[in-house]
Length: 250
Length: 226
Ligand SMILES: Nc1ncnc2c1ncn2[C@@H]1O[C@H](COP(=O)(O)OP(=O)(O)OP(=O)(O)O)[C@@H](O)[C@H]1O
Ligand SMILES: [Mg+2]
Image 1 (tube, protein in one colour):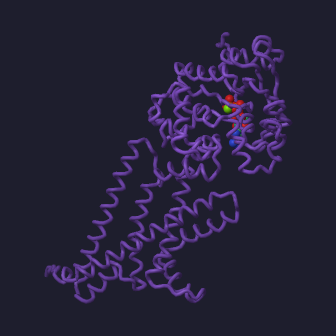
Image 2 (tube, chains in turn purple, blue; image 1 turned 120 degrees about the vertical axis):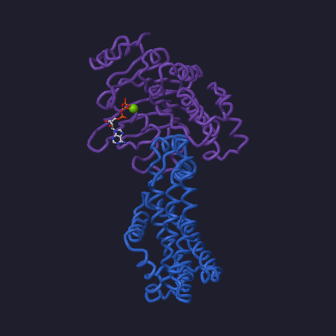
Image 3 (cartoon, each protein chain N blue to C red; image 1 turned 90 degrees about the horizontal axis):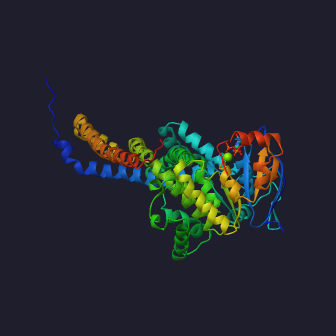
């Protein structure tokens, strides 16, 4: 059974139809890279999956259970979904008034109501996993971009999500800091985690993703294995998009 | 003929002035405290998605921001007993008026502070499963309040000056006592000079603190709102 099933997902902002009927099935352990031009709706798609944006039409089914019905979401239902579907942002969105370990503990403390000691133990474990055990007491302002993003990943992992959404996790980073973040994501892939990743790092997508989705005009324009989509794209628009990202190499 | 300054009658009445200052500070302090609580409540109501919370808060805020404080004070003191049968002492009338008025003002400061927090902070909070109230309490407000401190201090100064209006409903604040003394001693010049000096010293100290704080926050890279 699919971990996540999306049917007829539609989202519009004002007069713009951003998503026009997305159907998507995500199997446990799948790693899906989402490509597409700027404004093609990649972020909106991810944000609809954990209900940071509310879909206008369509259903999202998580582990066999439909979220909704559409238009009647209960807050408690959505906060549950967001714990199960973790998200990592381009701009990190760390809490600047909390230390690294405080950021990672926050969900455990406030949402899960764990004791301080319990939350701290878990948070330190997650920080160690992303290679930042020694930065636990550092505030975000004193971390590099790569370190910030790794703290943000640790923060998401602490909630034990069944699935992770990455929205251009390396796009805000200086080139020399991209590698450390991609390495963490790759290690999560090696653990068999289910993830959806919006990225412009085509080389990384080629090696790490199990499936590539190319979004255009609010629909899935083409999808397939990395070899199919990245090496032998069938659609003209996919080819044009890839041509504009020449710098990538496998 | 040059005016002969003589401060001795004023000095002789120093205890009255001291009592007046204490009363002024009492009204200012209590109104600020209540105003902060009310202001936060108004701001949260005004930012609420529910119209039955949003609209009344908006109404009170607008009324109190667009009418003169003296009119508000007179209305509470003279009109409220007639309409609602609520008799208030001058002290209570002042507290009620200045609390709501400060609340209306603080509501806007809170709102500006809350809205100055970038959307990403809400995203970060919601993405780990926080609900609206948790995100507000743990993530948004702590950052917003830090940015609002200078505006709060400025408002405190403003309020302390506004409280002189209570002299008009015979509450014995600093100005009221000064008026009494000047009529008793026929020394208005000296009395009001001393009173101006007292206001100056108290308010100047507060504004120094405010500026100090603002500088500290600026160093730590925090913006402030006004
Ligand atoms: N909250 C919003 N309100 C109004 N319009 C929005 C909102 N969020 C996104 N849009 C619009 O929806 C369209 C798709 O945006 P989205 O951010 O999903 O694209 P994207 O593929 O992630 O682009 P990018 O590569 O630039 O991140 C854009 O035209 C954008 O302007
Ligand atoms: Mg985007």
